[in-house]
Amino acid sequence: MELTLWLALLGAAFLISLSPGAGAVTAMSFGARHGVRGAAPAVAGLISGYGIQMLIVGVGLGSLISTSVLLFNLIKWLGVAYLVWLGIQKWREQGALDLDGAPLVSGRRCFLQALLINITNPKGIVFLMALIPQFLDPLQPQAPQLLIICGTLVTVDWLVMTGYSAVAARLRPWLRNAKAVKTQNRVTGSALIGAGLLLSSASNR
Image (tube, rainbow, N blue to C red; front, side, top):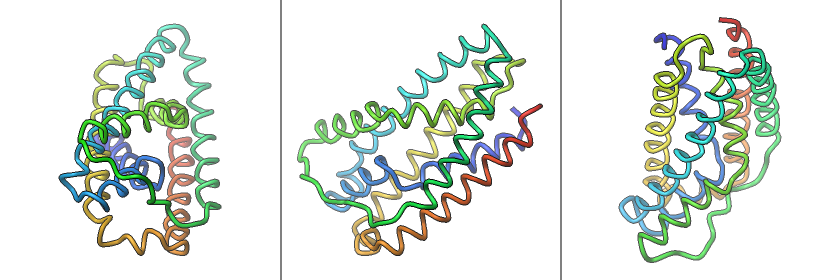
């Protein structure tokens, strides 16, 4: 993978992880109640679920590429459209984040609950199906590319989720502020739209 393409992937990875969603709310919720160390099992659960989704998507894309490059490119363009649509939806989102929920005591329960949150979220697989093809070259070996893509996404998500849990206690009032969250959603939405348009212009490599 070329450095410029990897840097685009790195930027997209941070954008995805920073976007408010089920994973971010889970990390912040546990962080607000238990601190960084207490939230670590939940973060590990989120990352494990994310990794399993990537494995599922990666295997599917690999099989698809071996069957039809044309079909892969079609899915790639649908992915661009989905990223733009997702950005528009994120721009329109309003409201504060809901950080309420019953606290869990054991690390194992924290891990399992967070794992299930990501594994059972169909939007995660759909999003990965839209994102990963943007950084894959169907004419090159798939395994090294998927390893770089998934490794980057997992590493960045782990860092961001840990960061979310670390600042959640201090920023809890801000995270519950509808106006602040609305602003963050609009910034994230604009960036997603821009990313989709940028990737579409580079899709015919």
